Amino acid sequence: MNAPPSWLRRTYRGAARPWRALLSAWRILHRGYGHTRSVFRQEAVDGDNREIPWFTYPALEYLRQLDFSAKAVFEFGAGNSTVFWSRRAARVVSVDHSPAWCERIRSRLGANAELHLVENPENYPRLLTERSELFDVIVVDGIERPACCAEAVKKLRPGGLIILDNSDRDFHCAAVLREAGLLEVDMSGFGPIVGFTWTTSFFFHREFDFPPRQSHQPAPGIGSLNPTGAKR
Image (cartoon, rainbow, N blue to C red):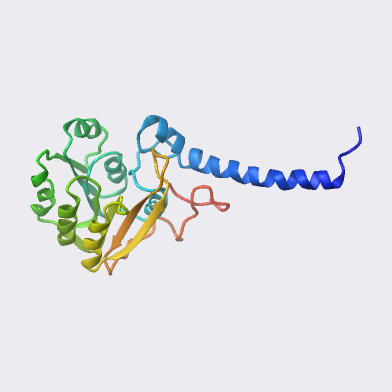
C-alpha cells in the first residue's frame, strides 16, 4: 500500500492537534481537579479525593500556595472546607445552621476544629460577634451573609483575609467589604460538583502578608507544563 500523500498527512496532523488540546483540558478538569469525582459524589473533593472548600478552582489554586499553619480561621458555613482548614490552619472555628450537616462533618474534624450549631438565623452572626479574639481568615459562605460580612470586618486581624463565596450573586455583600477598605480580587471559574462557573472573592487587608508554602510563588497550577515542586 502506498503512503498517503504529504497534503493528507499535514491535514490529519492539523486536525488532530485541536482534539489533543480538548482531551488534555478534559483530563485536567475531570482528573487533575477531580471534577468528575465531585459530581458523582456530590461533594467537594480534589483529584486525590481529599476534602476541599466548595470554591472556584482558581480560588483553590491560590489558597494552596499559602502557609496557614500559624493562622486562625473562622467560617460562616461548615462543610468539607472545615476539614480542609483543620488540616492546614492552626485552628478553625465554624458555624452552621443545619443539625444533620453538622453531625455529618463533626466526625471528620481534628482536635484543632470547633463546630457550632446555630439554628436561629438571628443568632448566626453573633457567634463571631461574641468571640473575644480576632481571626486571620474569615469565610462567609452560609446564611445571613450581609450581617456576617458586617461582623467579619470587625473581627478581622490586621493583615488578614475575608473570603466571600458566590460573590457574583451576593454583590451587595461584596460592596460592604470593599467599603470597609479591603482590596477585592475576584476568582471566577469552574469549581467542584456543578457544571457552571461562579465567583469566589478574596478581600485582603491592606497589610496582607501571608507566607508562601514553598520557596517560590506562584506555584505551578494543576495541569501546568512545569509541575515540579508544586504542593497540593
